[in-house]
Length: 152
Image (cartoon, rainbow, N blue to C red; front, side):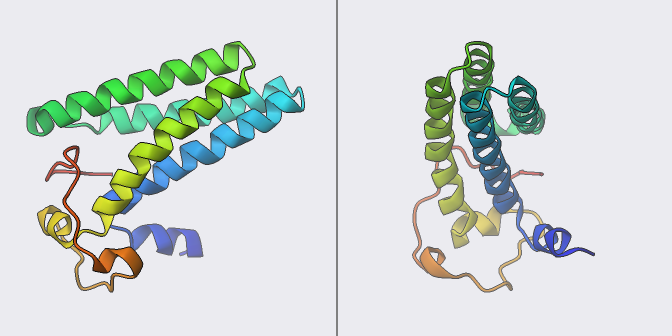
């Protein structure tokens, strides 16, 4: 197994969501760089990767369990999808930066949840045996958008 595969295998489901958000931010930055260097092919590839991640996240939502939180995330993903399409169509780094800012805000909530012991107890196959580091030692309230049935 490669280092990257090992790192992913060691993540809990919420950490995997954080990694997907990080991927979206990384690809949006690539798209911005492609716009600035006038490279439409690279812009399309980077935006395509963001849209793939958004579709994956959207497809994993459990509306039957997540209720209002799942609906809110669904609307969030749809708005980011629209921002990315518009930013790409208009060659607008500003629109893509707006998407990054929105993603970053929600990512921070997921990151907090990924290290919250109360949230981790709700996860199937909880991995509390793994040491928690840094801010994870501080118990914080779970964001409203965390469901007990996350799969990644």
